[in-house]
Length: 143
Figure 1 (tube, one colour):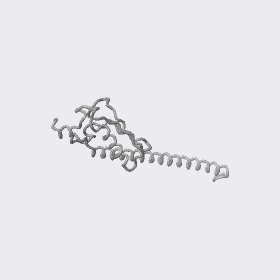
Figure 2 (cartoon, one colour):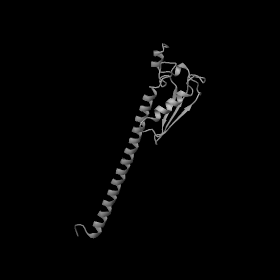
Figure 3 (tube, one colour):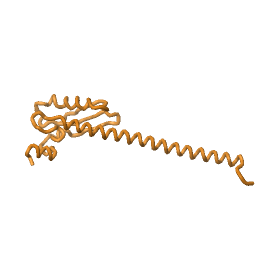
Figure 4 (tube, one colour):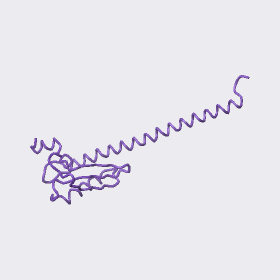
């Protein structure tokens, strides 16, 4: 007997269901992957904006921004867009020891997309002029 019988139609229907399930799984995987990529892209964009903002904050005693000066050790953006910044000062008894970390906190907190900010001040390793960018060293006549 040729053609599709009821038994063959059931088998074909099950095969089609399996194909549809696999297609749906692939779509879900791609969608989840795209969402992850979007988050990563947004995190990367936010990190860039944070660095741009840090480059607008200056140590009042040195005419170089705190990022190029080497005072920023880490910028971490979590998946929930909370930000942790680890920074130092040129010296522990720096006159801006209270105000500079607060300025960093306030300016980063004001950026769109930032959930919360935690600025950690550390003196390990201690800052030295070798931590400055080449551009900063040129600006200060050290190169």
